[in-house]
Image (cartoon, rainbow, N blue to C red; front, side):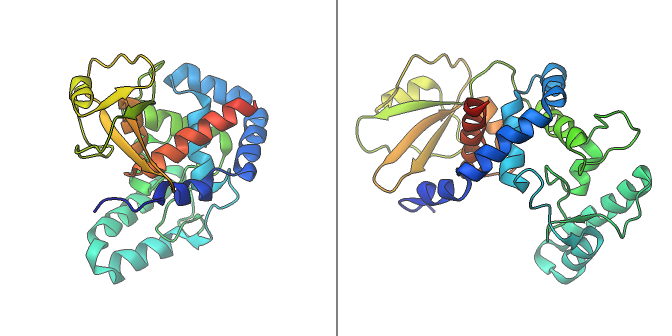
Length: 254
């Protein structure tokens, strides 16, 4: 189903606001040393870690008020369609609580059981969370551990240091190609379809063709492999684009 006209304008309006950008710059100043260390260790620019936190929890303002054990139990046993997924997450949550020495009745998170500043599900916590402040525990409610864990998540999902995320395209007319973060096209195919990069682009590997539907016009972009990496956090073009634009806006503010 193609996106509706103006869908990107509406989505962007929810996240690209002064409150989030200002909070991101403030959080970056407070946690500069941890962010710099994460960039050195994992090759992920600090602003993309900040972009994730901005969208997910507004830097800890919206961490969720549901007990994780209740959320996962309810969804695991009363929600037939995705019951197996949430029962598996409950299993990981109980193992996580044991591994980290946490009372399983204490952690609070989203209605779906996502936890901490980066909103990791328990299986993601066990695979990718790191003890970044060296206190012997992985604690995603702790800003330092959350910073290291998000950077590690990106690195493990293929982030390429120093490589671009998106590049604008100019369309000559209506575009017949399928769009979305999971599409894969050689640059030559995009050119044949009537698209050209707004400025020189080097893309040896196939890229994705992204379409963002503004109120008055449609915008086309190349999605480089790093854009696809952001979508491993949440499988949505709009989500990854909001993270990218917030990252740039916060960096601009620093």
